[in-house]
Length: 263
Length: 263
Ligand SMILES: NC(=O)c1ccc[n+]([C@@H]2O[C@H](COP(=O)([O-])OP(=O)(O)OC[C@H]3O[C@@H](n4cnc5c(N)ncnc54)[C@H](OP(=O)(O)O)[C@@H]3O)[C@@H](O)[C@H]2O)c1
Ligand SMILES: NC(=O)c1ccc[n+]([C@@H]2O[C@H](COP(=O)([O-])OP(=O)(O)OC[C@H]3O[C@@H](n4cnc5c(N)ncnc54)[C@H](OP(=O)(O)O)[C@@H]3O)[C@@H](O)[C@H]2O)c1
Image (cartoon, rainbow over all chains, first blue to last red; front, side, top):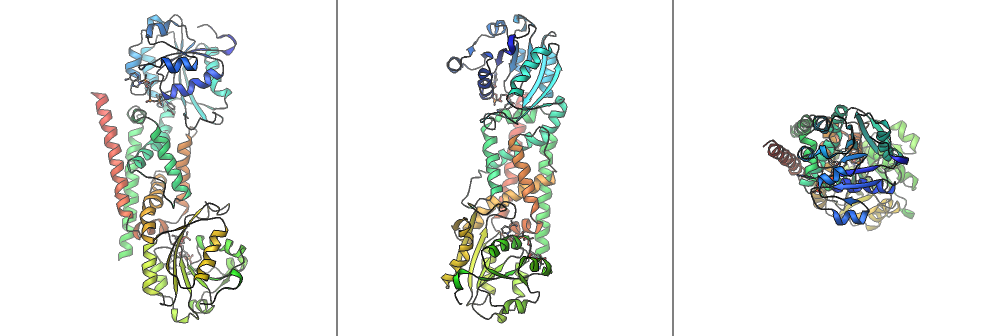
């Protein structure tokens, strides 16, 4: 794995959806050069952004990237990664994923990637909306799963550190435990509010306005992302059950109090 | 009903809990004079604030207030109002309530209050937390249910208008419909999150932080207040049912997607 010159990296991106587009604008600003491939054709968008878009996966792998960033949906990662012709890689490469669940891509990458490639699991805890005014103070989680080329790995992490992200190293398992109780819960509440079609009223309280923001922010993400958080985080099912149980408890408390009042 | 001189009102408060204490500090700042009575003894606090506290309800009623403000909990209003010896009132008086539900106190007041008293139903859509840095842009809902003395009523409303509140006139019924879908829903979500004991994590997203704020803000209010929102707003039960149904729908969608993935 050659060390990148002057910290400028050649980054290949697989899956050029909303989140990859968001990340790449900052990477370009920092002077990294990007090649992308995706299921859909992003040639026009990429030309506009100064990114070379290669529909052909063989050509993409041969373009000697220092880092290959996996930005597909959680649900499609397995299918995508298994279809990659890794024998076309010209050099040992750092593979980084940005999926919002972490044990699942870690296990997949360790299974499928060539043994001489490095593996960094990451989760930038922000997106196009929360990160639209810069990444300062926003959290970036990572787990250095299999790193031999420390220089390339540091250069990659520096992309986020340089923007002022709060760098948080933890295991993929720890991440998934915490994220089930925070991010998955947030998306579930947001989807429930969306299903109820809640809207601002002329008599909103400040606290209700926060719920409307939660609804709006979570419904901007794809249903694939939300269901990925559920299906591929083994701690999520328990949290869904916990929401149901807590709602049932609150309901019981309300009816108990109501019956006391009627007595 | 005599008109107050120079807009300075004599205001009597029944129920001197957290919300009455919060309101009265602004009223005093504005130069109104306050007399209070409550189930508990607030003599010391009131002395400190420059408020005369009269434990005896007869003496309280005889203190010739322009306005009597009902600030009891939703659940205790009926018991409190029915025990008031209205024959002790020395003059026709404007009665104002601030309960977070509106049809219920309106009906009670019209039943129980002397016919020569005026009735203004209000709901300041803020509290000690959201209003701690002033009331500017915060919403104040009111329904002029039975107003003959327009001058006293305007002087009272001016307390909130002068602080920059967004004054919102609507019927008690409209209020309750909207509040069931906003404030009651907010409190229910907050109590569910509280029951789940959610806490900030080292990898919070911005949106999860909003949920933590919703939890903290709603659990500051008494359980009496929350159960009052449920028991005495006839639109609340339907909304509780809607939350359950929406959660069930989201759960079904997740399991359906999971089963498709496994196929
Ligand atoms: N959005 C965020 O705020 C955020 C934050 C942190 C992490 N992430 C993670 O970033 C990744 C991308 O998220 P996203 O917001 O862009 O939306 P997403 O819906 O999770 O993923 C969209 C991407 O997945 C690809 N894809 C979907 N189904 C596919 C299939 N069957 N075969 C091949 N490719 C497929 C899409 O390709 P095409 O566009 O070519 O169709 C697109 O590149 C996810 O893993 C997500 O968990 C997102
Ligand atoms: N907190 C807010 O942000 C807010 C905002 C808008 C409107 N409101 C409304 O304002 C009212 C007061 O709210 P709060 O926050 O102060 O808390 P609350 O728990 O709703 O009410 C506390 C008040 O009710 C009295 N009370 C309770 N049970 C009683 C009983 N059995 N007999 C006689 N008095 C009884 C208390 O008297 P003692 O203190 O003497 O025991 C105290 O004055 C409620 O109707 C609420 O809906 C509150």
